[in-house]
Image 1 (cartoon, rainbow, N blue to C red):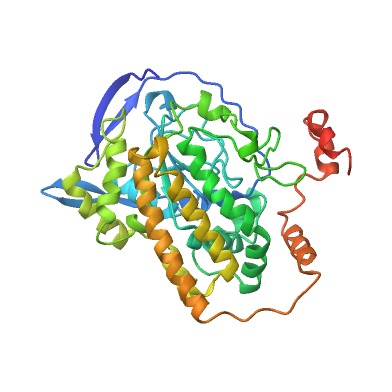
Image 2 (image 1 turned 90 degrees about the vertical axis):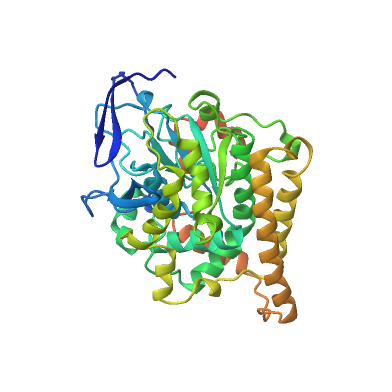
Length: 432
């Protein structure tokens, strides 16, 4: 896409562009989806009038904090080389956006928050997971994929849902934003959510990676508007290959294939964190309207971001209630996590992926995840957890619990009959 720079001036120690206008019509269909995704971005405008403080380069590897800057209203997505930060839910996006603002000095937008505002420059999302939405039209150009060990991503995901009271509308979620990153989930909710959602979520963790590595491999059926695979829809499998390409990856972005793989575990590590942050900087550097910290200042900005950013993070949850290590999987579930990691390690280390830079990055992280999961399995095998008493009604109890949270039965016949897609999907309901 062509971009024309019409003015360039320094502000607060950073260079900031004012660009030509281009009229653009954006049509958004806003479904009553969970507003979970917005919480990783931080408080909305009614909670704070200032963006998180970030660092600017002072020379000789030194830095100083100032406010992250938003683009002025007259700037459009066509004036900026935009970057999408994508991850499976609860995979460290808060750390990622904070460090990205630090290294760029530019505000990171959220896919759910302020839907009427343009999503330009830097945007974070969980799309295509059902917690994310494509609200940024064709204003972005490249992708950075953020990953986390699913052993820890899934419990963290449930914790966020719990802090938001399992909100299934953005209005409810907004009311609970002050509670985010303040407490962990009720243990009973964790066990029920884990046992009900485990099979789908461990699969979605992998499918999310495949989606971007395969440049938009659409794993959900047409008209599955929430992309959650609930009846009467399902996720595609190997017998359905080749899967279609997602419309947005085909038409709204140069490519959904990631320019870099960023590991949450590495990004937050005090030894290798600055090196991981340099991956983000390298992807943004020399792109239209992007201001990027020089490499010799990244160590400073990484440390200042951890020390001085005012928002709570995952560690703050340990101050209230149980620690994260209390949220465990069954031994059978741990075997499945290990199998999934081995499957993906093998997939992205062979064939056409063998010498692919991003695939090599994935595999290196998967090997670490496998080691961590195997160590936990070894401990569980040495000291097996007690087995619960059989409960013939357990599955039905889980269904009822999930429905009570507003998460289940999203495609009931009565609901879909009142939607414009009924004539296209009614054959799926013929026998029910």
